[in-house]
Length: 235
Image 1 (cartoon, rainbow, N blue to C red):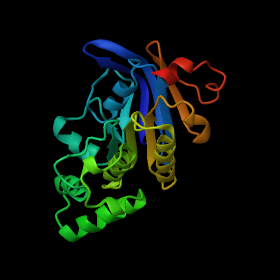
Image 2: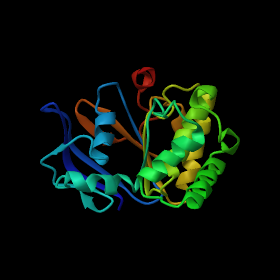
Image 3: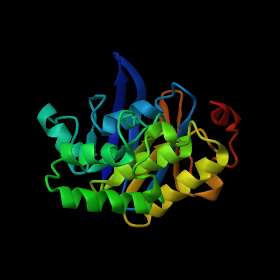
């Protein structure tokens, strides 16, 4: 099991944002987190890569590590096994796509230039962006930048991809392409968990659906089509 949360409280600035979270994610799973702005979606993801702490969990394991007891010096090793994707891409704007990806590889211990070059070409090919290798971020569209961000997330062959609103700044057709790409990645065994407001994508790209509401998270996979999620889609 890649993620195993049992009775976990998510806390921000001494306030409990989500209470008694039960959530499990296995290899190859695809999970959506939906809910209004401020309902705790992003906070939940942040606890998984140790950006935010838990409070008194019964169990809080990520990739076999007890993240309630993890030491700060152990966090980089855990994050290296993840691919993290943000809504605002977070590319370095003073360097090309190649150098953006090369920077990450160097920082995570890839010391041989030839191996870095090959890996960069592999991940860009996987997301259909090899022809953008020498482009600067400002020369790319929002969708292209998000494709590069996904390629960056794949560099270290992660066991899990954590994506916080990866389609939030994109038009619906580009959003479909991004989620389709993440689904394809899932087919290779990498688990994906993502927050989204694009409720219309849930029919096209099925997965487990969790909803954050009123301080709790609930599995609504078999219910959300019957639920009034209009407000969620407008967030």
